[in-house]
Image (tube, rainbow, N blue to C red; front, side, top):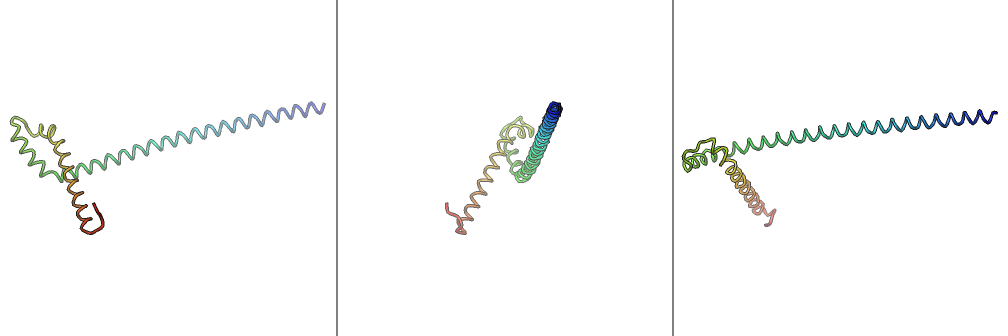
Length: 128
């Protein structure tokens, strides 16, 4: 009879250990899922912050370019309005300025690159 009791106790103990193991594994899975969800939330927050920082930086760069190109813009707008009778400043802003602005920025960047290359050649630090 003692072997039956020991056997029942043994079976109960095995069942209890199995249940504890399953509960522990379920808790670990839940913890892993929670960590994954938290990581995803942090990743999304970081992406949003990077996008906001990038947008803010682009606004600053655009404002700097607008300031740098203000005199050219006025000159080009007067020329454009003179050549496009019946159009107004809003038409210039909408139609011509975006293209002219890109061209001016590209020209200025090219000039800066050429000046930098000339300076490097003059100092002997660079060969083209």
